[in-house]
Amino acid sequence: MTGTTEYDLHDALEAFEREDYDSVLKLVMPYAAAGNSDAQTMLAVLYQSGFGVERNILEAERWLVRAAAQDNAVDGIIWGRFTLRNSLS
Image (cartoon, rainbow, N blue to C red):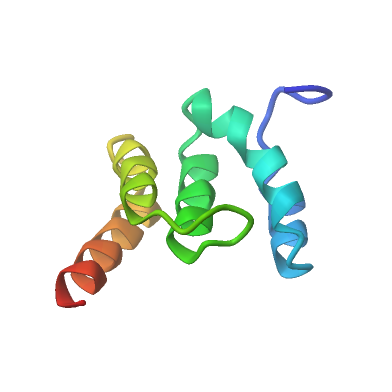
């Protein structure tokens, strides 16, 4: 993690909107690994959708579980939707 010690969701979202998924991955990975729940959720979205990484539902689930375990309400909602969607398919 160079430069700042805080995860910058704004930069990650801007890269995501530009469909620059390689940059999103580079921005979020160190923070996700360090335990930032917002970065973990963004990483889960990348894996669930196959944006910038090979689509991997199990890896997406792993990151969402880690994020939801931190009692982040948004992560919990996403985890619920993820679980429901994958149980129906």
